[in-house]
Length: 484
Ligand SMILES: Cc1cc2nc3c(=O)[nH]c(=O)nc-3n(C[C@H](O)[C@H](O)[C@H](O)COP(=O)(O)OP(=O)(O)OC[C@H]3O[C@@H](n4cnc5c(N)ncnc54)[C@H](O)[C@@H]3O)c2cc1C
Image 1 (cartoon, rainbow, N blue to C red):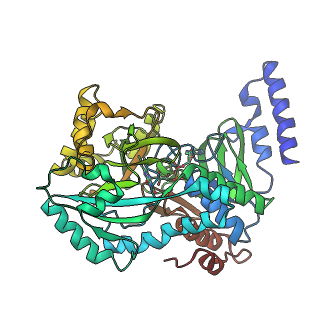
Image 2: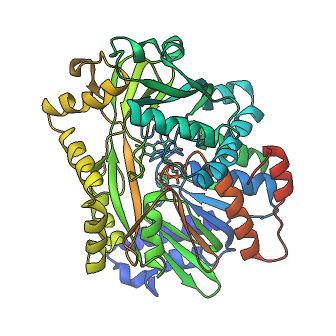
Image 3: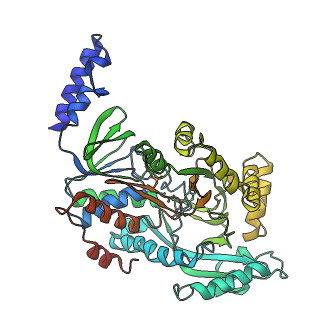
């Protein structure tokens, strides 16, 4: 009914426009009258903005574990998981905290059960869906040289109680799992690794699709609107009005913005998160012929918020090893989409001196500065690959630059949050909770922990909506095992 009404009024609008009526004829309080009329229908209880791993996992969670009656997910592209959750845009790793040597122990304790929820989810699906989402493969973090070996030994004693499947292995055992890591390596440089045969890769794009399928299969009153770009969120009384480019606005009693890099943009529209800015780090990838059986990471520099170059199979491209991501400062909100540069400038608060002070404080730290500068050089033709290969040779000593080929169209944006009041870089995901609205900023390991994040958001959403709706957290915890 609402749609027919909208179509009818839109038709009237188009016909009258054809005969010369100006847009203003139809405008009432800033929007065309047809849109205003169409939004006078029943508001949605919850509108989720963004159909990546985060937004779709919340749709699934509400559909399965809550009594929230009407939920709409709005996504800019014509299918889910097309930005950072797209299989070609991230490293496809399920980060559980075993090989991430830069995670403090407290974070490891939180991330492990949160990420393992995805394994349970995949296992609950029919075999064909499970096998399209979750891939089991060996995984290791490699230490090269005396210092790194000591770091990894200490790390092992700290984390081993949490990871019974992870073993500290020597050169010979490494050679059994990943022969190319040892081939041609100097016997004088000590190496060791923390390794498991049960590492996981995830196709987060298919995961997002599966969450949508599951949600819509379970609840006929839930819906997804693709090809709909949200331009503005406005508070009107106790509701939010969500403006969508070229479409009727929708109203919602509660909103969750799961637009990753765009979440801060929308938060600032509503006056939230003014103290935050974003350091935009683009990550690209390279391919070589298949040389690794699983994922091989290296010991991480704690000052860097993102994983260093690593190598692994690509779950969507057979017979290759994918290398990366590199880390290059590039001011956009979405990779390969230069139009998003303007929105980056709008959401990053570049007009404020304290943003610049924060950027200089963070980026001029010598280790980060050197890292970002060399990463910029990786993008240069000819010389770039020759510089990048030195990182890859830490893992595969016999790799040469000619073996590496830029993975065109691969890579995503890692928008690192900065608190401009403290001039600090904030690692991992961030959440701003406002008045019946949540904004999620989800750099790595955001995809790995999306279900846990959805669980937390479902609790908030239900508390926003009042006593008439419930969220069965206990049932979700029982289904997904031990959850923090
Ligand atoms: C190079 C790289 C490697 C990574 N590797 C890993 C990894 O190995 N493991 C891991 O766990 N994480 C990894 N990450 C992080 C991971 O990709 C993100 O945490 C995750 O994809 C975030 O999911 P999301 O749904 O929050 O965001 P996204 O997947 O980016 O989804 C946001 C959605 O919002 C939509 N949207 C935005 N604006 C609007 C609008 N105005 N209107 C409507 N819709 C809108 C977008 O179209 C998009 O679909 C990596 C990231 C990068 C860049």
